[in-house]
Image 1: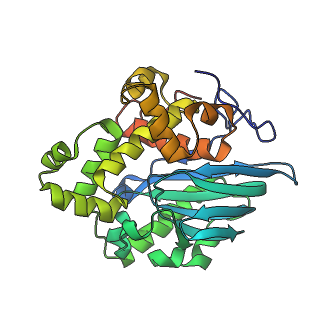
Image 2: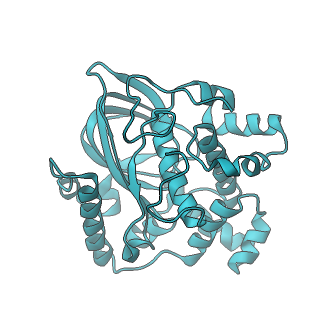
Length: 311
């Protein structure tokens, strides 16, 4: 595989992959928050004043994003959305969401566990896919969340502040945990996304139709599409150099042949695997790297806090 292309305007040496692609500070949540929160992240990228980036993101989880710097534009299911400083709720993406940003940018946030948004605010994710909304959609306070990240604070300070804010919100929501079926499907998407939906229902101890209803509510799409997306995101992580290289052959074997891979990848990312490698993808790589770090910790290929294979 060729080395992934890098944007020289924001290539970094400190918080970066071996290839020089910028990566986020991210970590697992505290133990008491793990039923609701999947990951916390802080992304800080300094760029020239006139810098303009056209890229995209592709998240399989609902996200709370605090945009502290940068002028952002997102192409959502409801049309183009322009934003500056704001705390926003992003539903999961069914395919790559085009994003542009001007200038240096700082984004802080967290990803939710599957089913957490329904447990906390009765949100059904099939109404939120490929969309974004104010954080009030989840019952959160814009002012409170925008003031969590104090100037001069470290990424860890900001992550700890988000954890404290989420503890308060979980308490206000009654502390209800997500449906355990959501966690089982989430684990299958990480460990065995080739599983059939019928077999997955058996593993979850439920009827297939009931599983499909629950997955639509907690993931925003049918289980077959959840597994398809997981395969594509793992392959994309490999192509961008933010995966465990030892898994490369296993990831490729999830596709029947090269034409199958190209067809599936193009349908979800809007470009071929070769184009994906040859074009700088800083925002996409940041998104993929955070997800892949969580995946490797979840399936115990690395321990929480370990150096990741791409660093």
